[in-house]
Image (cartoon, rainbow, N blue to C red):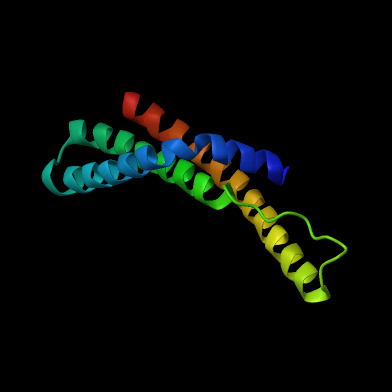
Amino acid sequence: MLQILQRTASRLRPAAPVLAAAGVLSLIAVAALLLLAPGAAAEAWLRLAIVALLWSLCGYVFIQAFQQIPPPPDAAMGAWQRLSRRLARGWLWLLALVFVGTTIAAVLLTNRLVTDALD
């Protein structure tokens, strides 16, 4: 499973600068809409800017977190090296579980924000 996440993150690696730029632009748009544009029309744009910020941040974090995964421990390694490698891989498994939960929450939040913005 971790290898699948690593392959996916490696394939998406060229999109990391685009996602980072989209995140910065979305953050600027959110700040500008909050400070400069009061009203109901600005609220719809604000919701869409928040959705763009959320997804660009999720994509960028996914790419950065899973592009390098340590290989499984070998029998030739010392005890501390094997323990260190297992802890590193265990941390990535925990991060993958947290990321799945965050993605589900992002989908639900996106659904709510977009349906509210379109109403």
